[in-house]
Image 1 (spheres, rainbow, N blue to C red):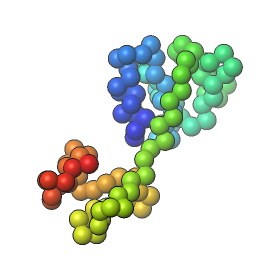
Image 2 (cartoon, rainbow, N blue to C red):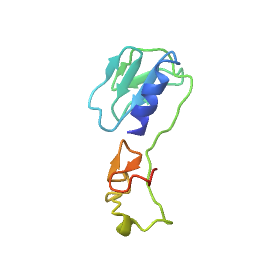
Image 3 (cartoon, helix red, strand yellow):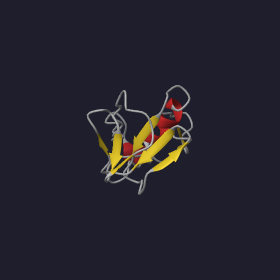
Image 4 (cartoon, rainbow, N blue to C red):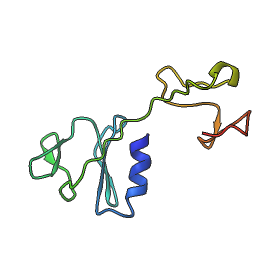
Length: 109
């Protein structure tokens, strides 16, 4: 997910990163990164709580909303190029390394 990708980049330059993810089922901390399931809350003091417990880590300074992407390229003929965006438009296939069209290597995203 985009939030996880961003968290990986931020880990080395921030004090702590919290990632709220719908695929996360329990609070998991690895180093200075904590993954949180849906339902986690932030208190007025900036602390993160899940259920009735406060989550380990410093108060939140900033919030970055990474809600994902819905891909659309209205200027391209997706059928002619063999592009698939999935039922919700959340991915583009077939791409190599999420950038280069697998059958048309001169087409990059």
